[in-house]
Image 1 (cartoon, each protein chain N blue to C red):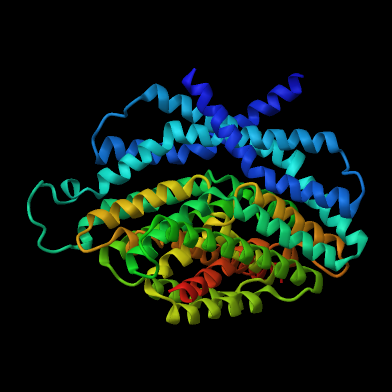
Image 2: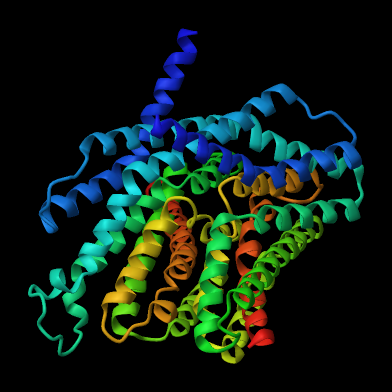
Length: 264
Length: 245
């Protein structure tokens, strides 16, 4: 009883989120374009599927994954777990004491990204447009590796208390250098993959991790240091996706050379 | 009917596979590192079932509804040939989908707390609400602007890297001048603006435009709208922080 009420609540929330989009699309459709949408019934049914799907998805996350993930983030960052003893004064923070936190950050970042619906949507489109040269799984894994690495580095930053903008600026410099060497066709997609990684699944878990760390590491403030993990998660996928394209290009070239050598 | 059922079961299975890594990570840390039993196993299984079902329906709806709709709009605007209306639509889509985004509302509230504790605004509920609303509209404006610039880029075929790299330079320069408290929030705001429904629509719009305009390549020119939408909020939010602070 209570459960079906929750689901209805999530569904109405999703419908409310979609309302502005629907108003804009149908407003322009009727006032400016003035042509019927092809297969309108199928499109509307698709919209219903998307709404229902998101409502189930979010509700399921709320029931199963978020409470556990958040609890685990708290437990792993609690001083009692990290220093072993409760109540003992912490003399100095050693970043090495937080190895499990980095490991959790990396694996949870990787695995939530694989399940991220927005990334799946972009990957489906990229496979379709590239004629299969970019595979759905290749892109998803490249992005997920970037997010995992980014979030692990982001938690290290919170523990070590180093300024956020140094990391981000160095990351940008790497992105810019890679842009000159990466195949041209991947660049726009790589830039896009920074923005799609962080939505429904990743943000709540990562935010819990960041806030948990910032509130338990001595000398950090939740308000100043709790933010920034999402920025890491949006930066590193650009690097890994361009890297993925560079490696595949390099392999293709090497195979071709090998062929020429054996053939000639 | 049976064909439909097997294809549905197949996509259910694919969604389950997408979810397995998360389950594995949680189980591993719970059992081996934290060494605690998994609480509420029934609830966990039921929730996972909902997530799998939801992801399956979402992907079905994507292919049936969101992708064709985004493409149909792109073709219709390309056929109509009015750049002005296309830009108006792009702005409205960016602004409208962002302004009500729950993740953004949450970030704006957090930001108002930071501003109040840093002394940029008075520590009253009213001032904080005004600050949060202002920030939310700033981000929504910046996303509307971003989609508009991104669409212009597709129409004229400008190379994306010059625009994005100049945007990064803008971010770096703003970082030097912006109040220290706003930087983390500004950097994060880039990531939270693009929701699960906006991404497929905007991607289909970009790819549709690039494939219906002569001389554009859907791969090199069609993507990139999301990149703009995640870049401009950083600049606008730091600007907002400087203006208010």
